Structure formats: structure tokens, C-alpha cells
Length: 458
Ligand SMILES: Nc1nc2c(ncn2[C@@H]2O[C@H](COP(=O)(O)OP(=O)(O)OP(=O)(O)O)[C@@H](O)[C@H]2O)c(=O)[nH]1
Ligand SMILES: [Mg+2]
Image (cartoon, rainbow, N blue to C red; front, side, top):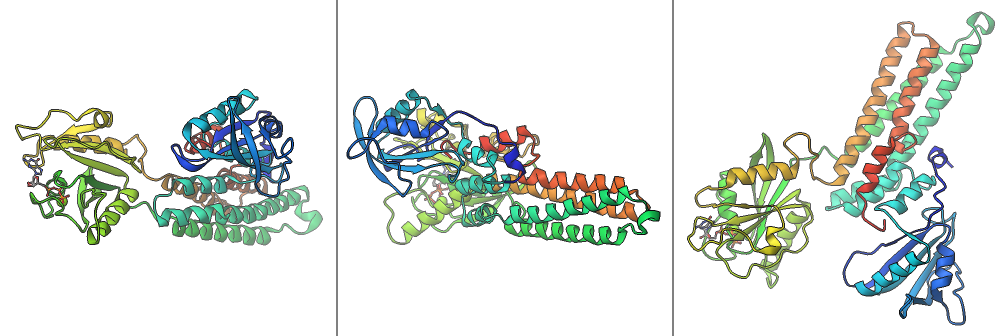
């Protein structure tokens, strides 16, 4: 068990949450972790002939009693310490009807479980030493990944690419510090040997290892590119005319719905930051053939975007409620120069941030830019609403660079006659930077911030 295990607090509570996405589905997963998980399973479920067997060999068919009736369920029993959290874990796979799932959750809470906070299962895995912080971040990055690139970057973390490197380097640093401290106890006249060369060579090795880890991290997640903004909305809403206004581009504009097929990209500069703006085909669920392909391209653009501008025609009737967005979204209430335009969007849209504009006259575009700057966090202060993955890599690189700086400075100081005890101190400081990456000494507020980004049930 490593150092993070030492941080494990005996939580005592048993947490419960629905671990499957909200809404209807074939199955919903209710997850419990903690000392009462077993008792709650025994009290809420029955098997063929009496209580469930809890055999830890895969799914067991049971009936779950939610207090009002019973539901067929599959029960998965994962006793600690071999479970994800190292606590007793129970998963109940239930029919994916939201009302049944809500009843089931109520029932386990009534039996003594407490609602899990977002990311609390993973946090318990981290606190019990099951995962270091970088692997826990891998879980987070994987569930929030929006592109193949982000998925690959997340699995590299989850499989321990950074954790293993940090572990090996930390061990070497510990050994070097021990050598320093042992040398302090003997003076040169007694032993005839202060292993300066050995220390120097060892620290150079760690320095090289850290540089390799930084290069790995840079390869894993290349420097964040420019913010990506996508124009989306129904055919004919005015996306291409707006695109041309914002980028000075020449996308085809026509009264004919379905004009844009291939995505077109250009640069929209916001608060001095060049952003990649993409114009896409108008959303059409009924599209077939090449149009269906254009829809797939548009979807991929939306999935990889940091901000979606949902362009809506202020004259058109029967505006559809928007589906879920993968990123921040602003409603662009367009064509407000026309006499028939309604002044504001109807209910479901007006709940989102919205701006009234005219792509024809340019009215409202300054407000749109302000709103976009805010949504992307470009105005200073705010963090960009870009993928979680980008934020994590910034954290890793910051600590790796700090450790590298510490070692370079201490090597230089050693040449200048730095005492061994001060040298040992600076090795300690470099170790602290590594521990901040893996979570041994990560401040509690930072852990809170990281785990708060998880979704419920993870
Ligand atoms: N009056 C007025 N007309 C506009 C405005 N924006 C777009 N239009 C017109 O609306 C029609 C459709 O505009 P496009 O920009 O091609 O619309 P689109 O959303 O790109 O359409 P698709 O590519 O078919 O999805 C064109 O005739 C535009 O000139 C506006 O703000 N005011
Ligand atoms: Mg268009």
C-alpha cells in the first residue's frame, strides 16, 4: 500500500448512487460502497429460496424489494478489499425506468446508505490507495472525453503511464536522500568518502527521468489548441451568413435550406484569442445518403467543440427544444432585423444564455462576442470550459517543471559548495512536487476541485 493509503480516512458510511446515465434505458445501475452494503443487499433482495447468496462470481438473479413492490434485478457482489473502493461494493442492475430507479435509491437510503457525492466512489478508491491521483484523473478524463484524442490521453493516465514513472523516480530520490543523510553522520576524515559523484550522477538520472516524463505528458496531451466554436441549428437559420460576418469568410449563403454540407472553418478572434469557428450543415434528423454524412460531420464538430452557438431563426415558427449539448452553449436569436421577428426566444431556449442578433446588419454581434468570451473563460480570471483533460495536463506539467527546476538548481548549487543537508532539503522539495502529482500531498481543496468534476455514481 502506498502513501495515499495512509491518507485513507475510515469513512464509516455506506454511499449509494445511480451510476447509469439519467433517463430511460435497458438497465440502470445502483451502486453501493461501504460497510453496510452487504446488509442492505440482504435486507432489500431475495434470491430463489431465501436471501441472496452473495457469491462474488458474477451476476446473481434476485428480486429487489423497493418497499412498494418488487423488481427483477441482477446483483453483483464485490467484497472488499478486492473491490474498486476496497470496501464492500454492491451493484444492482435494475430495469432502466426512472421511477423504479428512484424508488430503489430511496429504499437503500432508508436502509441506512447516504447519497454519494459526485466522484465519491473514485475518491474512496484513491483514499484507500487503490488508485493514485493520476489514475483517478484518468477515470475522470475518460468519462468526460469528447474525442478519440482525449480518450487515448485518458487511458494512458488510467493505465498508470504517469503513476509508474513517478513511483520509480520517487524511489530513486528517496535513496539519494538517504545517502545524503547517511553521509552527514560521518565526516570525511572518518570515512574518507563523501559520495558527491554518486549523488550528482543519481540526481542527473532523476532529472533525465523527469524530462522523459514531461515529454511523455506532452505527447500524451499536446498543448491545448485554439478554442473551438461551432455554429449549429436548423437549416436556413442563418449560420453561414453569421459565419461570414464573424470570420470575414465566404461560406455559401442561400434561401435554400440545406445549403451547407461540408463543414467550413475560419478564425473568429475573441478578446485577442484566435478561435476556430466551424460552420456546419443544419441539423436534420431525417437526412439520408450524403446528407447523413454531412450530419455526422456536424455532430463530430459539436462533440469536439468548447462552445456551441445555436443559431435560431427569430421569424420561424415551431422552434424545437434543443437536445443536450456536449459543451457550453449560447442561443443566437438571428434575423431580428426582419419585421416579423419575435423579440426574444420562447421558453426552453430563453433559459439558456441568449443574444439577439442580425447576421444581415451586424446588430448584436458585439454582445455575442462578449457572451462567448465569458463562456470560454477568455476574459481572464475564469477557466476555459474546455475539456477536463486539458486542465489535468496543465497540473501535471506544472509540477514536473517545478521538480525539474528544483533539481537543476540544487545540482548547480552543489557545484558551488552547497552543504549536504541543504542538498537533501532540495531533494525533499523535488519529491514534494512528485507527490503533488500522484496525490500523496495534494492539498485537500485541489482534491475537492478534481473530484467535484466527476459525475454522480462514478
Ligand atoms: N434578413 C435576414 N436574413 C438572414 C439573416 N441571416 C441569414 N439570412 C438569410 O437566411 C437565408 C439562409 O441563410 P444561411 O446563412 O445560408 O443559413 P444556414 O443556417 O447556413 O442554412 P443551411 O446551410 O442550409 O443550414 C439566406 O437567404 C440569408 O441571406 C439575417 O440576420 N437577416
Ligand atoms: Mg449554411
